[in-house]
Image (tube, rainbow, N blue to C red; front, top):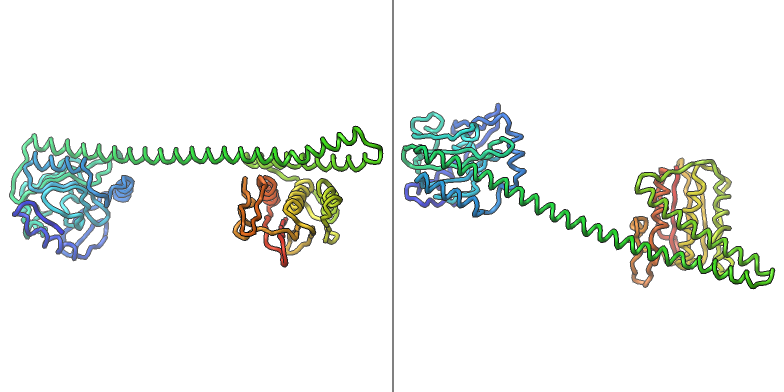
Length: 440
């Protein structure tokens, strides 16, 4: 709705309705209407529109800072209508107004579309004597606009975004003080636009700073959590070393071999955890590298079964580990892949597997290694996140929860990536999990 504050403007509503019905065409750099009216388009139109939209002011609610300046322009110039307008692609959008209630008008009949073409105040003392506006429906029909004065709103970039204008229904002029005031007020509107943009940027920076601070806090909490779990996980093999060392100090010769085996297994487990930690840290700096050599895959799988904590747990916990692999040679980093498989086997044992199968096959130009267990399995919703940094399983419906720090599986993902391969997990056919490591 358009409601004029002055009775001389009572016909403006019908005119704007008429404008909205006109067809608009973009042709040869000129915005044309079915009325035959024409408005040249600035040469820098695309850049101008980009600057306008960067201010993020179009279609925003009224703001007192702008309303006050428009009211002042109306008062100083003695004009019944005053507007702060912004020239968009095909419309004139009105941010602040005095004397009418309209949000926008078609660009092709807007006086301000001409104002943005120049750098100085544009004054039309009598529209009847100006060929650009004599046939304009706002002139030929009610409210019979006879006078217009507009000052361009020039952004800091130099682009004219719109205009501060005053309008009257009778021909007239502005004196020098009114002209200067209109120019000063348009500059103040530009200052307000810049301040508004600065405050918005400041708010965004504050929000970003808060987000960064929160991210740092989360990272610190994750690091503290990681430290706690690494210390916890190192306790077990360290206690095995200390306990068996004490036994060795007081035992007969028959106990020596078994104690030595457990000490060796515990030391290997601690060494692998430390290497995993170093490799994950190196990956952050882009320094995780593999050194492929040709290896016998079956021998590698057998070595994983016979070494470290796996061997100790087979002896003391009754866990069954077997290899299902053909005689096959493949180019890979033997040490890195062995540590990947040791991590998978240790996890399977840690979470209750009774039987583990290490399987190998080659198909489609890739070596696929599988670690198959009959443990409680991993919920489908968490099969991807377990390979992320510091990831830990949450408690599922069966009450299964991971106490892992997530370091080992993160290392496994990095090792797969370094081989240009991939690693994933899915459910075993009957019970448990199947971890797949594919190396091209």
